[in-house]
Length: 230
Image (cartoon, rainbow, N blue to C red; front, top):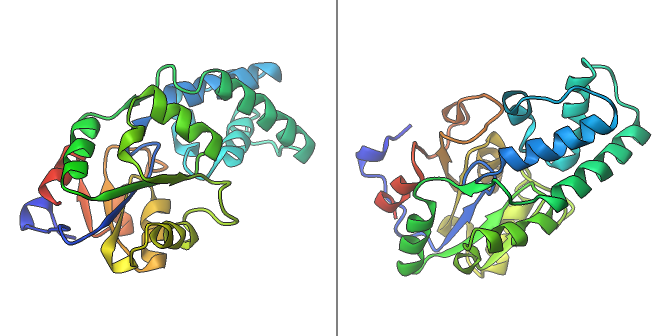
């Protein structure tokens, strides 16, 4: 896999598709707070950030399911309980969507750089769509993005290629002119499933796995490194 000093360049790309949680923003503090409010409802002990982090990335329902199972010491969760728990979590997260969430170092400056260079930028996340815009507004980064989709925007979500095809089509460009940037295997697999190149960031929360194991086109350790590639 190429390293950043091997002069890899993506300057000919037109569209950059970003993951959200773990790539642009660290939302673990607020996600953890909402999960633990849900667990308290069932008289379960709260989980630590370290316990919750590996459950993030496959969508909100799986986050709730895995957290419940962990707090219940791997007992199976009844479907009716899961539905109720999800509603409790959803309400708790709506009430505190962006209290302690923050952008990773270098994100704002790099987005400004990419915008000045003329790249189109969009977000493809497995976070529910309703939470995306409030966070973009609160962190004052909405102006950088032409569009965004969440886990419930289409019938399929990452690692399916469908969201990437959708965004490429919406932005009126071709797959060979697009690149996916993310911290999770879902991002890299979605890119590979679409035939798109990808950049893996090593600082996010990829189920406690090394993002390089999924063979993105290149791995960077800092969001600011993108300025060397575009």
